[in-house]
Length: 545
Ligand code: SF4
Image (cartoon, rainbow, N blue to C red; front, side, top):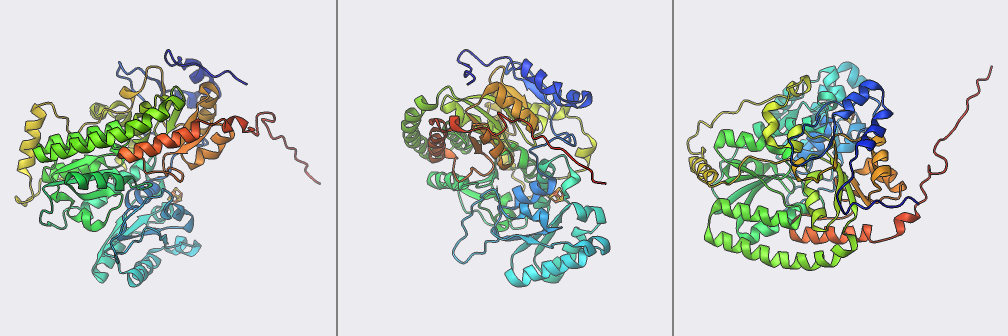
């Protein structure tokens, strides 16, 4: 049994681990992967390589562009029929695997549990699939009568040149509902991140601003980059309601396209997952003058800070009093559980390789329990997600980035929709030190000597486990069982396994208890790692004459 390392006096220098990882790679691969690994020093400005293509042959955690567009951004919206134009295999991502929840009103449609696919066959690849796509749109319309239909392109569609946008326009004219397409072929970008950007562009072009609805609340906000996994958005909504904050639209957990159409009537945009949806926040500011702030509702302390930041923005005595009362009441409940759980898990080691914000947000929850994050990284991040938005002007624009359309957004020509009051409010608050449109990134928050790795792969995962012997590993389903066979519990942070919600105060309590259940047990020591004694499967081949 290897003796567990003691990191009470700080994390060890992981240079030998990096050398060990790189030694196995061919020279060119080692050179490239070296740039994706940073020994963190929060006092320094450090650069990490991110958002570059995974080297063929390496087992990556990443998904494709279509998965980011359909699976992540549009998947949780309940009143749109999302048709996947492609072979049925791609539709794994059409059937929600992220446990997005939604709460339709009585009698309201909910298409989330369905998987719509054109199920392309060989003949459609040879002769084109547009006719089949039109038939699928008509069939979906006749069966479900949705208010909108989205068409998602998969790799073969791009290769044969089916024009999903022309078909969508034609069908929109024929059926009289909002129908629009996404050029989100799997190969189009480096990862799902490209799909997020494509989804943002089309949601902004075809939905946002289509309904200038009258105001419905005193403090109107949108929440961007919250996907209601395991009921996360319900926790946030409940607290907003109590405080008197009106949530106009969430992009896109527990959402409707209808609410997205009047999202431009909000007074503030709040960005939760910076990577997947900051584009819409920026475009809404350009067009309507609505400012945006970064928030984080994962972790009790972060949720409290975010609520207070919203109250500070609106600067209303009644709202501030309500928020303060909620925070005080909820923090007392959270503290009781935290103090009971902390002694059982304090000092344990965690590593996290997920998403484009989660590997950062969940560090707050681990910190609250005294669990050390020894290594972390994102699956599909860009440099600003690690280093902060200050590096955006220095990020090299490569061919992959140019492949994604950058919308030119200008100020609305309708003076009634331009929010001069919000522009003035932003200037006033900025002068007082209030931070808008900013995101610090993950690295400044991480401890000295923690190892930051972008797009971690299977080989690196094995070496990380060997070196750190973590007590919990957070990643996704592809990593789950292999990590658990090492005797290390894996908590899925894409879909939370069967758990959640983990946002706000009740969410923090859920997470604390989940960590106690996973870490305060000896069961993992009993795992008999199958390859420990027989690390290789040896085979032989006989050629018969
Ligand atoms: S990479 Fe292409 S073929 Fe594979 S799931 Fe994504 S869209 Fe479909």
